[in-house]
Length: 484
Ligand SMILES: NC(=O)C1=CN([C@@H]2O[C@H](COP(=O)(O)OP(=O)(O)OC[C@H]3O[C@@H](n4cnc5c(N)ncnc54)[C@H](OP(=O)(O)O)[C@@H]3O)[C@@H](O)[C@H]2O)C=CC1
Ligand SMILES: O=C(O)[C@H](O)CS(=O)(=O)O
Picture 1 (cartoon, rainbow, N blue to C red):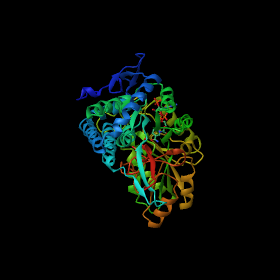
Picture 2: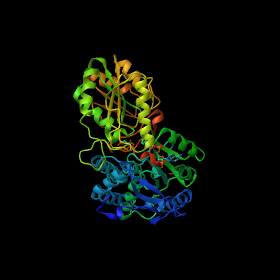
Picture 3: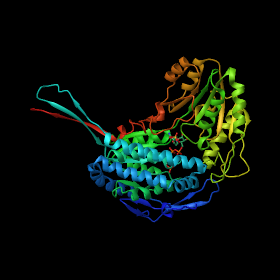
Picture 4: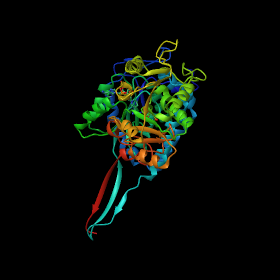
């Protein structure tokens, strides 16, 4: 990585404003998924370091909450401006540790910074209420107060944006944060911490603890009674573990979990627009996003035309290292990720699906995989039941609207769904019938800081972004005054 701002390359944890090695001195390697090169050796902290960070965050939180909201806003905006000023370097770090194309990485940095700006402006707008009294001598006011110390656990696929989407609202309302980034992508988190320190967050308000033992570090965050909220993005499997661990102390949780997004194309759709939406929704981040189209349902009358057009667009895509000009599809994050993609392909073809394009690895070695389109997908295939988290599109055929909605909803997940139609009545009927937290109508790109991102069913609890995004980090208290 050739960084302009070398200070962004930080391999220690930030605990209480001090850059720290692991107590044991141990480190873990961060590797570049494009070539297997070791990018850095990073402090391998554990439960003790997390506990220390929580103690410090607990002490720092009261002073941070006592600041004027306008003062917190200024610090957040300085952080935002520093992130934007260092966007090229932050993008280079993202691409080095998780592989996405530089252009996508730059987009992620800007997307991540947008949450900081959004919640900086929300900070002075955390309003309470007065309530008409129930007795003549009483007066009631409702206060909204920061919940306290927040533990943040985030995945590798958006190593900047998943952190800022969580910590920005928490910090804006006066919480302090202990953030534990994924083992695969700690450098984005420590770079954010470098800029947070420069922006002027008081020591201990924002802590980043790096380490490889997610389970033990997560247990400390869940079981430490000074932590009042866990905010998590990742698999439903891990979300369930965290929720169970938080049950003992009734620690609140926000969970952004796995998806299994249906993408419906009706006969009356603009087929070219639907193809464009499918390309964005399916192949962004090499298919490694929780809102990627995972099942593409196409009405019989336009199935062949859609399949042909989609395959033609996919054939124009370039696979390669994210640093290479013009690359659309970078490497998958790991060998297990590649194995899962292969499993879904082999299962589907064994059950009758046909590969229209792709289905193979390019001669680049590693975890690169060609973008793929399959026809003849059916509900009994793994690709219909599990999130592929890779650049493989399975096309399913349907006859009627009711059949499409029933298949789309036939899953325990409920994060994002998409559908294309130009019929007004169908737009309302299908939009209301889809059991998902986010629905894209005639668009494949739904992510924005202004809207409440989150899922239903086993895709999670809580919302991130939008005017709703601070709710998860606030406690509501009412003051009942007598003798008036
Ligand atoms: N809803 C969303 O936005 C996202 C959903 N996902 C889903 O997650 C799946 C796998 O992605 P992946 O990132 O591996 O998700 P994981 O759930 O495995 O990991 C997410 C984060 O949780 C950490 N973690 C893992 N196990 C524990 C534990 N027992 N206690 C505390 N923390 C833990 C991981 O650490 P470490 O990586 O160091 O092990 C990582 O930081 C995807 O297939 C997708 O379905 C993934 C990303 C985003
Ligand atoms: O975790 C993810 O996959 C992200 O939430 C997807 S998005 O916010 O970039 O759409």
